[in-house]
Image (cartoon, rainbow, N blue to C red; front, side):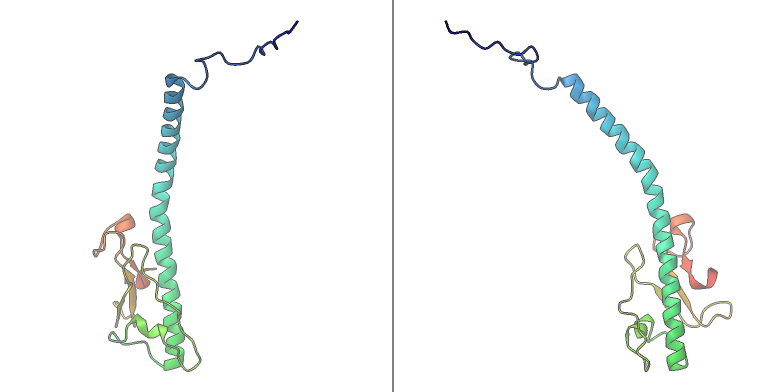
Length: 144
């Protein structure tokens, strides 16, 4: 006599496989909460990171200006601007490529600077306008 193989006790019955709507909604709610926590904690750090990058870029450009001054005996004029740092000097000193500020705008260069400084390198911050506070504050070589 042929004996059919019994079904295992753990096998799903027809119509009982998959997740219920309530289970899917709970998972989506948890993912939404985790996303909210990450966004709240990460976005403020991005603004601070952009300001710190701008400060590091200004310091790099200042070093480039000092090397240029040592080789050329003067700082670039306003007409020559920071682009002069990309042209090799007698000793070969140069910056490969001028960086833009973290907000995508070129750094400004003013000759002479204020308060007796020979120059000032600046970024207008996140808002692209003079002044401001926090991320919108200007980053300037003569204020560090």
